[in-house]
Structures are given as structure tokens and as C-alpha cells.
Length: 189
Image (cartoon, rainbow, N blue to C red; front, side, top):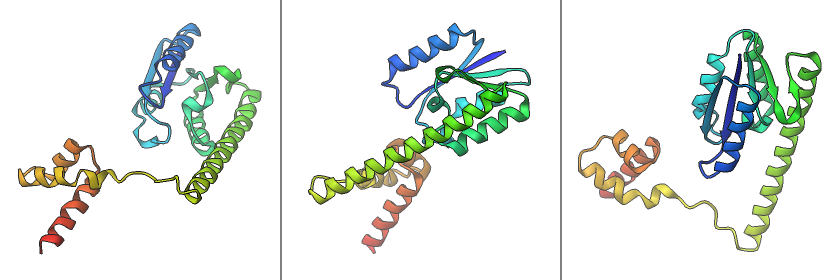
């Protein structure tokens, strides 16, 4: 059975997402797992996990591009190992790689290493750009979102909501809620 996996980093990437779905259907995927979540959020890629749990021996997991599946070589190798243990092949359409063959496995390892190398270079260039912007006084950095929501957190706490409910309503992490409430408590003392 051919099982597809499609992913975009954001919901705004509609055209790229639809193109992936179309391509996966064209190659005969009977089931396609799909999500719109950043690859960096590895712990939050539920549909990828569902796809990896769903596949069985003899199946082939198909993705359109390697970066739709994994962002790092270690993560890619972890996925491949998991598929290998189940007797599942991996096909990457853009690279014409199929791990059901020895050549496909070799090429995938090489391409994964190159993709990780390119990502590392891109991150280094990004850091260089940030350093130059800071030196020029143009870089302001990430705005602290928790501080901007402190008044709302205190308002919800006064309404006797639990910390978890406050975190959910404000879209913050629970640790940030605890920090804001602790700081307010210290300031009041």
C-alpha cells in the first residue's frame, strides 16, 4: 500500500500544500496523512506519528520532498530506522529515491547529509545577519509576548481560573503563567 505524507510549515502555504496532495494522489497513495506544522516542532507532528504508526510491512511511505519529512539527518535516520524495522520503504518523489533498493538507501543518506549541511549554513548566515543588524542598531529581537499579556493573566487569575485554563486562554505556556503570577505575588509583598 502507498501511504502519503504532506506537510507545510504554515496554513498560509496553500498552493504548496495542495500541490503535495495532488502529487501524492497521482502516484497512487491510497491514504494521505497531512498537517500544517513547522518541522522544527518535532514533538507536535501528530500526523507524521500517525503515518509512522499506520504503515505496515510491505507498505511504502511517500513524500514529495525530503524537507517535508525531516529537518535534520539524525531525525531522517531515525524515521528510516523506524520504517526499516517495520519493513516499510520510503520514496521521495523530488529526488527519485526509493529505500527499497540499496542505491536508494545510499542516495538518501547522502542527500540527507547535504540537506542538513545546507540548513546549518543557512542558520549561520542568519546569525551573521542578526549580528550585523545588532551592530547597526536595527535589530530589536523578539518581542516578549508574556510580558504583554501579564495584565490578562492577572485578570484571569482574579477570576479564579486555574493556571492551565489561563495558559490555554492566553495562548501562553504554563511556565510563563507561573512566572507572571509569582512576579506579581513578589511585587505585592
